[in-house]
Every structure is written in structure tokens, then in C-alpha cells.
Image: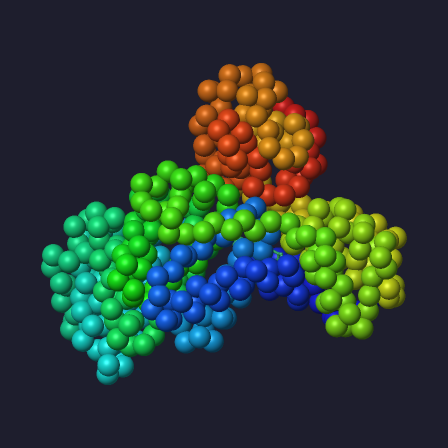
Length: 395
Ligand SMILES: Nc1ncnc2c1ncn2[C@@H]1O[C@H](COP(=O)(O)OP(=O)(O)O)[C@@H](O)[C@H]1O
Ligand SMILES: [Mg+2]
């Protein structure tokens, strides 16, 4: 059918034509935003889930709600090896400068800038493109101890005071939070704890891979009490059908019931795959309604596309030893596997695989659902690994 009018949106962070099955999570976010605005103590939210389940698009949706409610929204994406302070300082500085322009918060925003400057001066990093101008002297002795867990709460407190005075609540949206170092994670939690205690208007909604739960569990802060950790997963049957059907209908087309059944079966109702199959089925179908045969024709193309993009970008970041580990994990089948079984299929001791396994966890390729267990962070990655490396000991 007409490719120009294809409504589906496969791609990391691409807003779906129909955000299906996430009504409760959106509602929870609205409550957080409403409570922060009202100056009430609030439990934040850290969304966890595999790749491609729709965490990033949920954060985008929450961003819109925050903006409608008059929040200053800071959307930050963490990266492996990038410091939390490097990611936070530039948008905080910008925010304080903008508050500084408003009469009612001028004094507090100016103080915020001085404190931010002393915070930066205590870090052993330089932050690209961040200058404070000659008029801003650091406030020596505040937030500059060099201990992030002490300094970050101080910074947040002062930003929160300025935000309150400016009547401009702040919503921090942090994506890929699993890439934070443990000390950064706990400093961030402590910072949110501080502003929460003082009822200052700063909210945090974050998203990350399932390994985030281990980060929270090991954190010596109040991570478990201060936040909820809703799991974002595959859509339920009804939502998955809507995710496919509604966009087609809005373009005057439809699927047969069997076509939808077929897509749900191959995609296991994972959002990214639903978009990919919706997209390819639309393109190959000669006419509406899209049939099960159309879906079968589309499958080959959809898998080819995923192999070249969604799966491959992750695979290419791995060393040969890491690929061998993942191939062995894949040979055990989908879902959670015992780490000992991976070692056994490679014919080595489980302890000798520790470093490879850890680096795969750090890279966000695998995670440990429970002690001694290992699973892929990308749905259907086991099938991809077998296509990419047909031989177990190749690579
Ligand atoms: N609720 C949903 N309904 C339908 N499609 C969705 C939904 N959530 C996400 N998607 C689609 O899934 C893909 C992956 O979304 P993304 O937010 O990048 O996932 P994640 O951040 O969890 O890896 C995108 O193509 C997006 O359009
Ligand atoms: Mg994402």
C-alpha cells in the first residue's frame, strides 16, 4: 500500500502512532507531576525494562505533560563512561540563567549559579562549553567538597529554592540510567531525597534497563523507598492489537484477524517489533485488509531490517570474546539461563567468564535477573545471535 501514508514508526525513541497499553504509567506520571507542583512529598518513578519496550517514548510523553503543566523539563540521556555531573551541569546552568532573568527569583538563581560554579570547580573534569561569565563568583565552601553524595544534594536544594521562588517546578527525565556509576546513582537519589524533604519542586522520572534494579538494591541510599520501579514490558494482547489496528484505521485501512494473530505471535507483543511488522506488512500488502500472507511476506524483510539496525548496532559494540559468550547464551534458548550452563557450553569454568560477563552487563547487552542467572536485555536477541553466528565457536 501507499508507503508515504505508512503510519508505523519503528526506531529507537520514535513516537508510536498509538501509545497503546501505557495508560496507567502515564497516569502515574501525571500524579507525580501534580504532587510536585502542589509541593507535596512524592515518590518518584524509575521505569525499567528491556530494549525496545517503549521507555524512551514514555519519557517523551511525560515531557509533554510536564511542559503543559509549566515545568522546566530537563531531558538527559546517560551514556556509558559519561559523568553524571557533565550531563547535569549544562542544563542546570541554563535553567538558573533563565530563572535569573525573572525578577522574583533573581537573588536565589544568582546564588544557584555561584554554587553551581563552585560545584564544577571541585570536579576533576572540565565541562564542555560551560562558562558562567565574569559576574559569577563561586560560592566557596558550598557543594565543592568533591564528595558527590554531599555536593549534589546541596546543588539540588539551591536549584529547588530558586525554582520555588520562580514558580517554575523542575522535571528531570533521565534515560538510560543504568549507565550511572553506583556513587552517581546514590548521589542522585540523595539529592532527590533532600528536595523532597524540603518540599522543593524537583521531580525525577528515569528509565533504564533491568540492571537498574541491582543499582538501586546495592545503593546505600533510600533508593528503594523513594522510588517505584514499574516494569515496562511487552504489551498485553488487547493493547498489542490496538497498537497495530488503530494506526491502520486512521489511514482508512485494516488487518484481518489472522494477520494480527500472526504478528502477535512473531513479535511476542514487543513494541519495537510491532512497529517493524506493522510497517513492513503495510508496505508489502497490495490492498486492505492486510492479510496473514502479507504478514508472512513481510516477516523476512522485517527480520532483515532488525538485523541491520536494532540488533546489529548492539552486536557491533562487542569484542570477539563477548560475542562468543552471547552466542553460547543464545544456544541455550530464550529467556533466563544459568551462568554455569553458559560456561559449560563454552567448556570453561564459570569464574573465568566473570570479566566478559561483567563487561556485557556494563555495555547493557545482558543482565542478571537473579544471582547466577543471565539473560539478554534485547528481546529475541538469542535468535539474532544464531543468525549472526551460525557456529557456536566461530568469531
Ligand atoms: N506503547 C506502545 N505502543 C506501540 N508502539 C510503541 C509503544 N511504545 C513504544 N513503541 C514503539 O517501540 C519502539 C521502541 O520504543 P523506545 O521508546 O525507543 O524503547 P526503549 O526506550 O524501551 O528501548 C518505537 O518504535 C516506538 O514507536
Ligand atoms: Mg530508550
